[in-house]
Image (cartoon, rainbow, N blue to C red; front, side, top):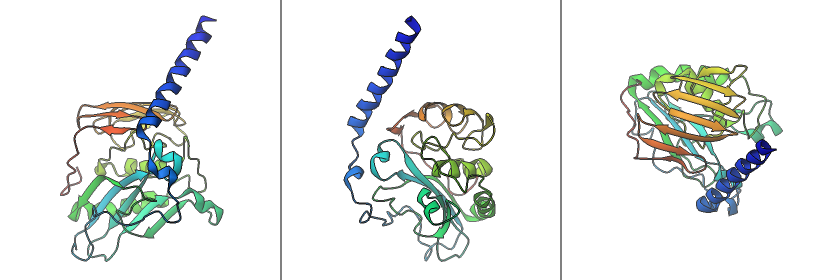
Length: 256
């Protein structure tokens, strides 16, 4: 009886914290019309017209609607040397309505707003190091094992896809934020590499996970809510609020 009461109190406390976070975050994206939401670039990606070198970037932006209070949509953008446009790799769930795959490999602005939400840059590689990564990114995207399924929570979703790529290409050194729900979804295993591809992770279907890595630091995922501390790139990680800490200085000239 005492155990049941304690569990109820813990559950109530969790929901209370979530309610407070919702009130504090309060995103305006809920009220916007998806048909008229902006997809304009924000100036984080170098112009192909003036940047002949290869570029690889990883982005994320709050999702459209009420889900934006909790999570982000992530994608990978690449521009081979002397290419005149970016190729973006991402998963779009509603593609299953007319296609047999959720994986979209298409040309669009690398740093476009995602239905009005401004993107954040997670990785930025340039030059020969970036050029060497592009074929591996393409191969990983085309071998994604969940191309015919999509579940917003706990995965597989767009963040599961990007984590699949970053695990395959650890040189990107991507620290996906705690709001990237689905990044901890492992395929047919309980133990694997951290989403960055460095360190390790123990995960039960993305619902309960523990991550330890020199890129992510320490993270604990409870039902998709990630709490963490990164002493290597000082930051506190909280559900809904994301990464709290100094702005990151992303290396461009190498893929270490």
